[in-house]
Image (cartoon, rainbow, N blue to C red):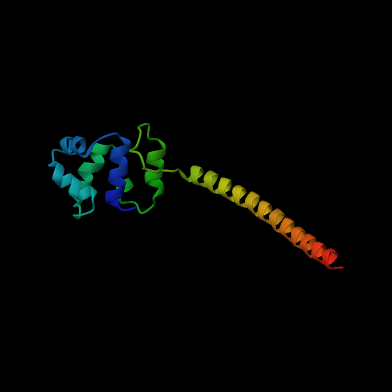
Length: 133
């Protein structure tokens, strides 16, 4: 996740608008919005200020490890906008386990249906043979 994406997630998690954050920073809304959209490179002094206002360590913003944002989001007590999906590592593992279980069940169903098809095909063959005899 890139810095501008992390900034957006963290801002939304705090339930702040771009306007709210820009005001806290003392910046123009347009300036902050460009940073959040990834349209401009952010200088270290501005990144320091952002980290300070958001209450995070600057390393959390520049760390290449996405666990930082996931941990931040996991502790988020605000509603994120509809359509935003954030899952912790634990939640992802749980969802994966559920999906694998569903796939195993579907595989069993498919195997059962394939066996039924074979039995029906055999019945058709037998019926044709008895009808011609």
